[in-house]
Length: 209
Image (cartoon, rainbow, N blue to C red; front, side, top):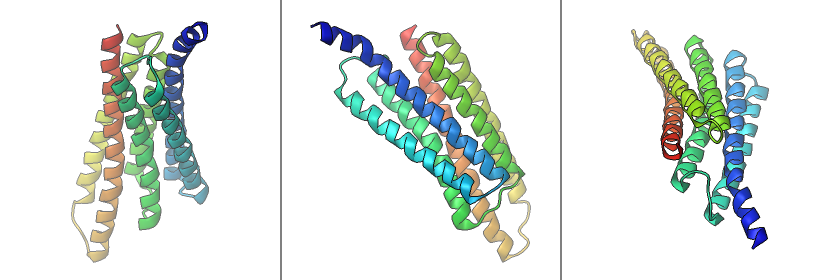
């Protein structure tokens, strides 16, 4: 019985640790994306891929433990949803690098701005996860900031699209436009997932306070 009580006290913290670890890997991965947008080298691309694989392993462990746990610090659905959305942010960073390499798209100022905003939003999500247990209202403040950054990201996304379609010059230019639109969409989707993660955090704060 004593061991069982200790397990119940200890296990909920494990989920918070895993969520924090996911958020930390996401920041590291987006750092790699930002570096790639400055200097698109094989090393930067490899860094993003490596971090994405490590983050996937953390999520697998979290889901496995969630399936076996009796007690969780947040609603089980919220833990699963939050883990998935944080994972999705990094997945889109990974696919952005992959698509840029496959399509031979070079970074431009819009991509650099969008990646930088993504990095700031990922950091706000990380800080929210660090504060969620002991200071939930502070965590919510970080979630609100993440949402504000998503709005800024969407503004840059629309600006980039407007500049992209100002007028095709030839067939080669049209092809380049289509490639860039696909990359812009990847980053916009990443921002959407960050916004969703922030919503889950805000909902969790309401439930635990």
